[in-house]
Amino acid sequence: MGRWFLVIRNGVPAASLIGADWRKSSRSGAVGNCVELAPLDGGTAVRDSKCPTGPALVFPGSVAEVIRGFTR
Image (tube, rainbow, N blue to C red; front, side, top):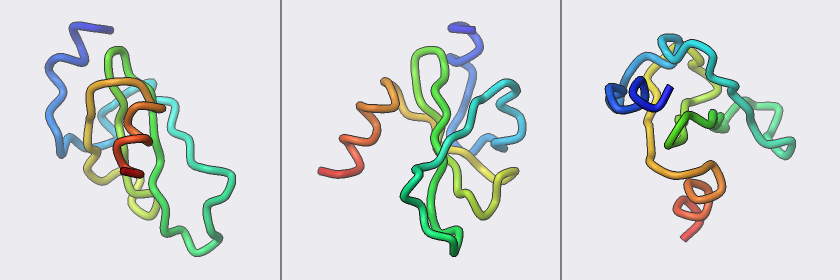
């Protein structure tokens, strides 16, 4: 899967990330205004929970590293 990650571009349709295990925080509101994260081999994908088939952003690093980057 590592080589697969190298060809992923930001803005790729989230639905095309076959096998991605999307998760959102247990503290997410009922309104649906949250993001979902999926660990990938060598990176983390992020998508809008209101539009699960829409574009995903892919960041290098683990889920924990990506979350820390958002909170700085």
